Image (cartoon, rainbow, N blue to C red; front, side, top):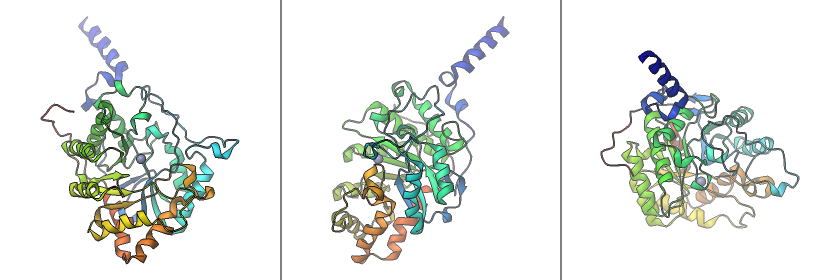
Amino acid sequence: MKKLLTLLLSFVFINAGFILQTPAQRLPKIPNLSGKVLTVMGPIEPSALGTTLMHEHIFINFKPPPPMFPAPTNITVIEPPPTDPKKRQGLTSFDQSLGAIMDFKNIGGGTIVDVSQFGLMRDPLALKLVSRASGLNVVMGSGFYMRQLHPPDMDKLSLEQLTEIIVRDIAVGAQGTDIRSGIIGEVGVVGKPLTPNELKSVRASARASRLTGAPMSIHNFEPLDEMLQVLDIIESEGVDLHHVVMSHTGGRDVKTMEALFDRGVYVEWDFMGLAPLPKKADEQRIESIFAMIQAGHAKQMILSHDVCIPSQLKVNGGGGYTYIHDIIIPGLKAKGVSDDVIKTIMEENPRSVLTFTAPRSVVKQKKKMK
Ligand SMILES: [Zn+2]
């Protein structure tokens, strides 16, 4: 009888899967990728990265994502061309995206980080194919996007379940493939106020970062005090903030940027090159970047385009994936910024962020978690 009960119970446990197992049992074996960068083709040496765009979307689709359970495995971002090209939302054409990133390859670009994750219809296979076809290194994102695009079952998902999903993307492969994420992000935070699901997503991302050694990129639109609260959570999970990029924060007021630099994170200028392009150089942006270089922050600065809508592509009159090289870098050089500083921002900082640290065990939380 006891045997039967055990058998019955184990059957229930197996089938209830994620709900009944303890977090320690659920986590896959985590490889030690310390000192490597993880691309969609596998781990590579950091010295192979070259000039790197830290925040782009080669493919993206703003459709509401499906639930996380049962785990979706057949997401594809590629869609047949719409009859009216102006109606295309997101970036969903393989050929168009390949052509667009080839511009970056052709000016000597080395690596693109695609921070689409589950909520932006991340397509691991398309990213691997486009990496192979272009010859560019592609690093794929993980985690959960803005709350408007959380999966419909987000309320029910526990911190441990979210952590497991992210860890699997990095340790095993995303969405049923063996293609692995090399960065956790962009982790969506909207704030005003921060919601329980956002806090859960941030904490799970930080925990997964600690467990795997993967870097993080946070999508920020919230005010400074909420950003600092997010950083407190990440730090409380034992993540070194020098492994964290604060996307969309470059170009904010100086006080905000200085407060972020003080915490050790990277401040990222992004989302640029929208059609119609300005007739004069992108003066305000160049000025803001230059001011922060002058203030001594070059070692914590990141520049990327955040290409995510069709009007940023060159075929539609935008700046594409080379706007920084075509407009921003010449603008900075005209102000006297040296090649060394440009190299720090475009090569060395991305290399430092993307290089994995050793996996570590979860930090025991003393206080009740927020
Ligand atoms: Zn973003």
